[in-house]
Length: 354
Image (cartoon, rainbow, N blue to C red; front, side, top):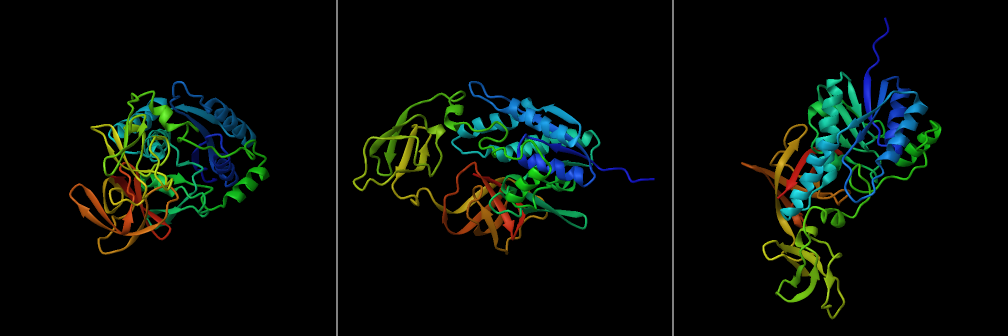
């Protein structure tokens, strides 16, 4: 008797990466089904999901594989959008792509697929999973310019054991070439930019649908009023655009947001992007996840504070409610953002900066 083909549900977004992921799995003799995840559509914004779904269907037809549309709009609204709004209202700057992976792709979609009896789910992420006996490690994608392991730090062993990243060990150029080879309709489609599935949108304009705009003062660290802003919730530390400066500096240097006064609805700015009020040599982490063993306190690791950010050496110490991260040099550690821990190419996990 022939061995049963392993079943894979591929999350197909209508982009070239997930299209090639599906094609590679078909070529590798998996039993592949394409799944388009329909997410919540924001009001008053044009959303490309219908066009993206059509592209995914065309790829599935080209590959002669079944195609399913999975409506996870409620899960996306609750797990990504509501979370993002609540974080901005609390004065933090969240990373919605991390939450999309955690609650939608490797939350609702993963759980639904496993309940359907599939062996694996697959996506077009640029990341790699390496098996070490009964343990699975998450590693950066081969192409450093496209690596997406930063967004996947919340994955646990159960996810890694039943997930495939077929394009993770390819450079982007080769993925495009494979799309041409497989004659996929998405071969020349541009890469999507913006908020997870939703696409490109202005975050401030989006938030104004849910958070009331409340103009306030922009002040220097010494208390001088130098401008106006639309509402303190819409801004993030380190930003130097989006607010109006009425009092210019003599040297015409740009102002950077170094702090936010939520109670008085004020932005505090400085001309030094490394103002002492903005940078720190320690950061606290909450909601941590380690997909293998937790980091040791006597070792130096590398971390990224933002997607494709510089890798910085740190040590980590466990506390009762999370971890304390110690940096060699002062850094901008923005509350709400993900801090992701690496040992070489391996992504160990991470947490949320508080």
